[in-house]
Image (cartoon, rainbow, N blue to C red; front, side, top):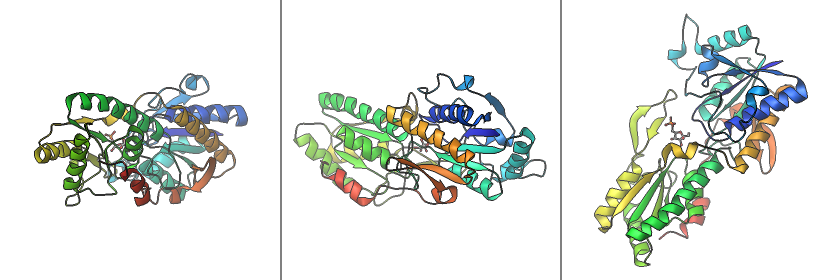
Length: 346
Ligand code: F6P
């Protein structure tokens, strides 16, 4: 059996740990061979492949990023049609020509959405969920999230001391798209004075009230804001650019908040946009273990013929869920989780 492997969408710490676990488990337990596809769905579309054996995955467990490369190429878009064949047809032809019997797709909502469609078209696919945003409905956690939260928490710890020295407010903008998980967890862990998430549109007057109260207690406020957060009266702040799956590129809410806070409170406010720092570097122990377990269970799913499934974490168990279900709904922060954090605002 020859198994193809690809990583799609935004990279995240732990991707290499999955690749290693798939290849090591697949070679040791089942004698499988592997083909690496470069740069997400671009790999099977072109095709663009790289050799992938046990030697190739030595030493990659702690390494961030992905040795396969990634992209947001969308084979379902009209742009993917070439020589009279749709993107899906090109992928199916290339898999057949390369002798790839099954495919493991490691990705988020978009990558796994394509995997679900390929499965409907008869391709043998298994999915592995990844995203720092932790917004996939079918799994309790995705790997990459814990690392991103720890990076953001460390940044908040550092910003506390400099904010206090200068008696200024510091706004920390974190990633997460339409989900506030990174902001919520990093903000709670870092003792933020205000946490703003997309699920709970904010009232700028109330935010300024919390900021002023914090100054009155002789401490400097730290406001953690998710990139997708927006005021009650407005919409999300995103740039004009969209990716191949139609997602807007977020960014700007931190600066908007800082200028409103300065204007309304008369206090100095500065912004730290953490951006891709949250996605880079070595994964935490939690993410290495989760990624390794996902990889081992994904290749077992291939061996069992459980195609159309995605591996998922439920409690402490790794389970299989249908890809179609896994990609059907985003997991957002429920109001009661936000309420737990709100007690500490101000
Ligand atoms: O989905 C992961 C993520 O890091 C989001 O949190 C963020 O909005 C987006 O990807 C950024 O994408 P890019 O790397 O294409 O700028």
